[in-house]
Image 1: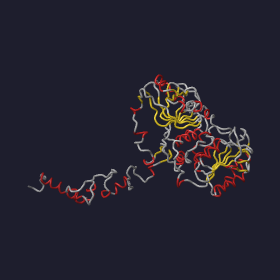
Image 2: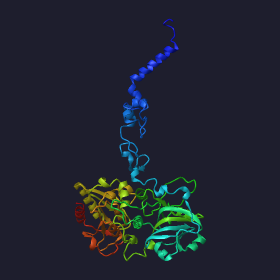
Image 3: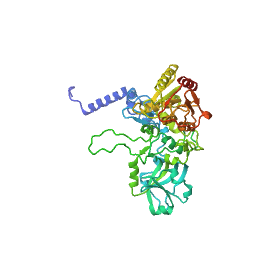
Image 4: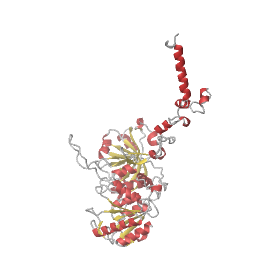
Length: 517
């Protein structure tokens, strides 16, 4: 055969085999890595004597089999069980920032998926067939206007408590003002059999109801204060056995204050109702809480079956009038309840502090907030002269290392996040007598946390003092240059609606320095 003759099959096979052996031999290290084998175990694996691990539990090749390219693509950080891979910053985001405004938390910081709220009930358990054994109501806690009841039945325009012992419940007017779609009644099991039927829906978890027809800033505080009475062992770190409330019902409020637009009208931003609780506060402090309004409440009553509310916490300032003393704020009853933990508010306060990232080692020191009311057309406010002098003196404190915030209680002037963010950082809060000072409940909790409230001389009211006392917070009322606290607090003489409040700025600044020193 001439040397120029075409190669035979045998010769082609030998050439291909030789090139393959050469390539694998020359790049043996890379070849083993492609196969997902470690160099140390390669021989044993080929002989079938070792365990072959192609990928690790994190989806990557074993450490000994990784190369520079994989580290460039994936990174060199460790993968911890039950966590997203990364440097740690991706595991929680307390604020809704970024393109999607998302918030998330580590698994250890949230309830497991097997908790009762998610794991023990299913869609097909929505209805309850009780037959002749109609669920009986149970009174868990009560002071006039603030009540906790288990198994109250919502049906056909009324709220029904079924019981063999009606004397164990307070009179309805002391629990709630019964009217419209919130008529309350207490009936016997026999009466219930004739009017309610053998089955119904089940509204699981804890439901709150603000049964007032007018809004007030005390509603959220009073509801939680009442609810917290079920756990007298709430700890200083905010630890509690209480499940978060799932819904808050406003049976007398529509969601919007204006009329519904006609079909086909161009969309426009509508005015939401003022219910006494800022809508952003609800989402920050109670992310799982759903707000329900008159239309939602009406939907339930229009259904043809009853619904059993597993646990209802109801607040009604009209009914609360049965339990207050002369000159008490109308919401005083729950704040005078005995046997509660001194840390009753900490679960809520710490949740909001986490939202603003002012907890633990991140909590600042030497921060104060002044809530100004100068742009209000009604209510008390400082004279312009004293307001200007106070702001100037507070700004001078910044030169000494203090952090000072001047905030407004009007949403059009300041965002809620700016106002509450400042208060959550503070240990001293000051302002003219007004219910907006109830936000002082969100201040940092230290032995020196102080609320200073300015009154016209010879006047006083308990609205803020009674809440501050229940929180263990230091409270100081001011008459011009005279601080009043503890046993020195005067008797109640309510100020007028539009009085100008005089203050001695130098005396107040001196007291602030002593408090924050």
